[in-house]
Length: 145
Image (cartoon, rainbow, N blue to C red):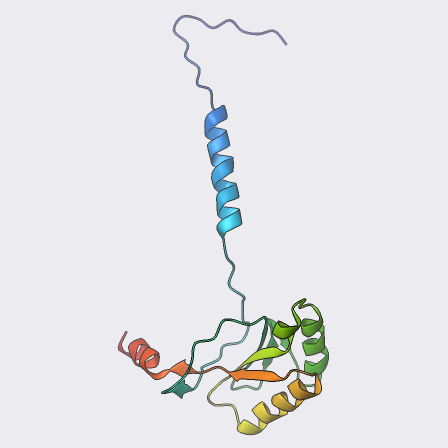
């Protein structure tokens, strides 16, 4: 392929440095982006006057008012809960994290259903169960907005 000779009135622009900057920005955003773990079912947490903030754990179980159960973003049935829970537990390398679960139960869920899940957790060897609630003042702020 023959090269063209540039005339006196033709101007070229070297886009190499701009391409480098664009790729650097893409890499920066890919590295710094934090994805929130998706929960597939909607849960309205009960309100508590006194609650402590807890670092998010790797094992999360949510149950909504329709008795749909979600383990780490995967919707499951009550029959498959134990198998899905053991599979999720086995994927965690830190054993202290694997022994702790955050249980998010909708405020309309019957206590009996929460008790069943806690029995399954105990059978699976999970010794620490934290029940998630919503702080009272946070709930009041949501109402006012």
